[in-house]
Length: 153
Image (tube, rainbow, N blue to C red; front, side):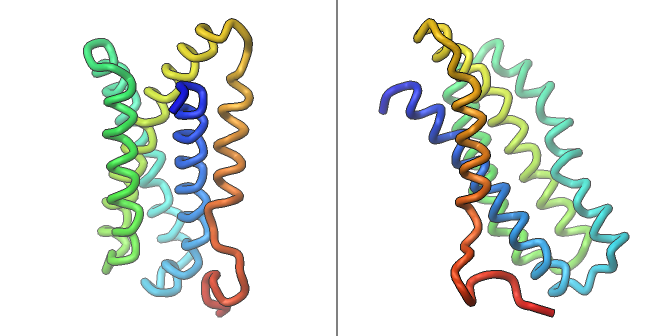
């Protein structure tokens, strides 16, 4: 896969993961019987995980190739997102989401470094196309066919 296509694919995949998670929030809230305030606190998990992981990812990237770090972050995202379905409590969901956010933060830092390298190699600005792929992924991620979304309550 060409470097530009690979970076676009990573941005798209992370956008799709975010879209899938956003579409699942109502069903998970209902399944765990979370009050709005508790849900709000749980939803801090991805942000906290991401904020904690990004500086660590930056430090790791001084000695490890960005592609390897992207793979690690994507692995965490792919493994932890489905685990949100199995959380039995707000605390468990928070922990899973914090780990998921750490994976997103790790992949985000590394994929942006790769994006800059591709842009420099091409000799033209392409960063906006990478970030557009994230947005398109966010729209494409959730399954919006009738009967496929969260239950109506």
